[in-house]
Image (spheres, rainbow, N blue to C red):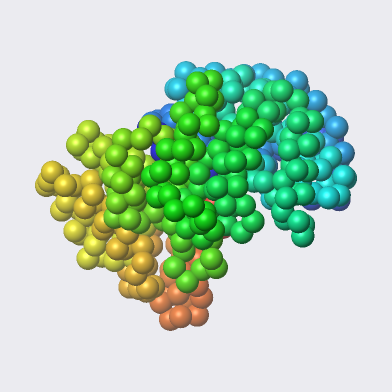
Length: 425
C-alpha cells in the first residue's frame, strides 16, 4: 500500500510551477515556462524518491495552455529529454503517478463545444503521461460532470462521448464520485457500463452518500473489483473536512488519530491512498510514518524534526522543548507522539513571543555574514511586528530573501516558510 499526495510539494526549494497570462503568451515564453516547470517537477520527483513516497499526482499546470489553441508547440517532442529523464526516475523508484483533469473537463455537457474542449484536455493529459513513458497504471481521474436538468440523459451523453475517446485515453481513465451530483453507486454502475475503474472518494461519499446501505469498507472493496491487473493497485481518495470551512473543503492537515481509525478499519484491503489535503507531502510522510512506526529509524524522524523545528518554535517554545526531549529519548511511541505534538502546535493561536524567538533563531544563520544595513532592517521589522504594527509575514519574507541571498539550503527547505508567499521563489 502506498500513501501519496497531489500536485504541490511544500517546503522544497524551487518546486513552484510558473504560469503566464494569455495576453503575455509568446512561443519563447511558453517554451521557457515549460522547461522551468519540468525542472520543478523533477525536483518534486527527487523529493518523493528520497522520502520513499511512491504515489504522486502531477499537476495539470506543468504545460501552460496545453490544450488551448494558444499553445501549438509539440512540447512532448521539444522537451523529450526532460520527460524521459523524469520518467526514468519515476520508473526506477517504482513510483506511481496520475493526473486529475479539472472541473471544466466535461464529457456530459449538452454543449458540443464544451465536450470537444474536454476531449482536447484529455488528449493533453494522456500525452503527458505517455511522454513520461508510464504504463496504464498511471491514471487520469475524472468526475462524471453535471446533471443539466436530467441526470439520465446526462449519463447517456457521458457514455456516448466516452466511447468516442481513443483507446489510450480510455485505458487510463478512472471515474470518481463527487460531493454533489454523482454518488458512488451511480459512478460504480457507470464504470461497469463503460469498463472504467472507479476510485472511491471518502469525503465525497460522506457528503453525498449512496442510497444503498453499504459501509465505506464494502464500497472500497466493491470499487476495487473494477480494477484490472494492468490498472495497478486500486486507489482511493482520502481527505478530512476542514473545520469551519465550506462543505467539502479539505483540511489543512490530516489528523492522525482520525486517519488511523480509518486505516485500521480497512483490515488489509490492498489499496493505494491518495491524500487530498492542504499540507500535501507533510501529511503524506506523517501518515506513512505512523502506520509503519515500528520500522521508522531515529535518523528518519530526525530528518523530519530538522524540517519542522522552526515552524514548531514559532508556535510554541514549550512544545518545541517537548519535541527536543522526545528526540533525545526516542521512546517506542516516538513517531506517533512526534506528529501529535506537531498537530498541537499547528492549531495554536498566534504567539508574538514565540514568533520573535523563532525569527531570532533563524537570524542566527546570518548575523555574522550580513551587512549592517541588513541587520538594521531585520531588527526594525521584528520590532514593528512585536508592537503589532506589521504582520509576521513581513519578518518571514525578509528572512526568506536572506536565506536565498546567502544560499542557506537548510532554511530554504524548512517547513517554517511553507504558508508564505516566499515559497513562490
